[in-house]
Image (cartoon, rainbow, N blue to C red; front, top):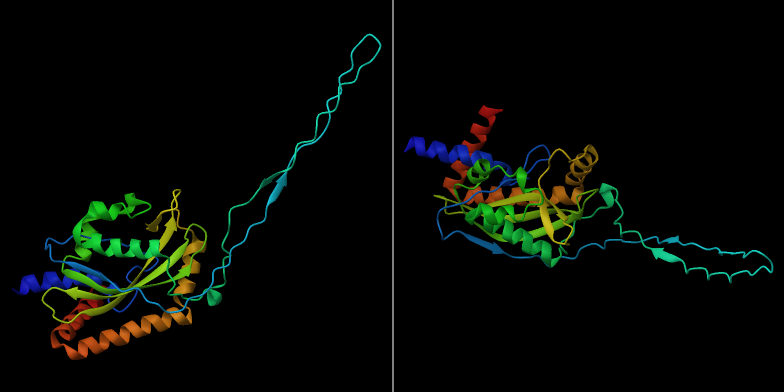
Length: 270
């Protein structure tokens, strides 16, 4: 029994960054797993809080050509061919670009597009059911570590009360999405309030996908996202989750004991 409990602690230790804090720091990779129990559940509860406006714009580039073709016939008399009409200018609009806001102006919003909310719901569901379904949600699925993704949720029974918030991204990252939820852990009756973030970008077909940081993840992206996490509204959100987790621990001795053992084990491995 002690060996089984230690295995539970070890695997939950991998998950600990997702309980009461960000699960995917910028120097690690998000991952998922599967659970054998068919009763695992995923609940979604989108927030209706007011959000911020996103500013978009475009600056057309005008291209065109003009001129005449003069043809002279010899010998005399000389006949000049009529000039061809000048083609109308062609407008070539540049892609719509969302300005890269300074982090302090990139306010957190609960106005999350429906397609991104559906992506997040599918993300949590597939973590408990099918790694193949999960891979379909990943922009660069070659980065998925199947063994690690399984371990991250081996003792998770369900994800409940999922609420999404987001900020604008930078460069190849369209949005940074923060998902707040209650994690149901096997053998623990009280849910653990949690938060994790995911990087989202739209593919060539306009479908949102989760991006796992790889060798193309630039320093500019990393630094910008680190700055976003440090902004006051994100820190307030993380603080709210931590307070909810502390209240849950105080109400359930089993959850309190589990979290203490995870913290101790985490300190031993640092």
